[in-house]
Length: 101
Image (tube, rainbow, N blue to C red; front, side, top):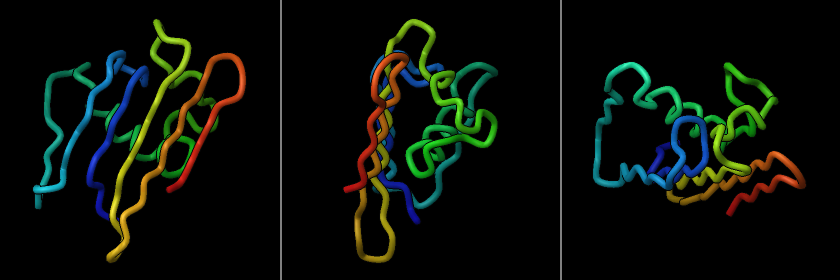
């Protein structure tokens, strides 16, 4: 599995929409000061794929940014010659959504 693009909004430390595009990269390093959101990127990848994160488990409402009512995580990735997109949208109230395309 090779991640191509990750979009997060309202997820952990990312209140606004942010897109990480790794399409033309062979090697990626996630660096920055404490609190910059490095772990949130890795959690977003795990959450998009599995619906939970190693640290939080299935308590997905705690992944939503404290000032937001819902989050959105979309991961486009490649497996062999196929490109897939996993989308998850947890909400504080109501039905959360997920989709694999």
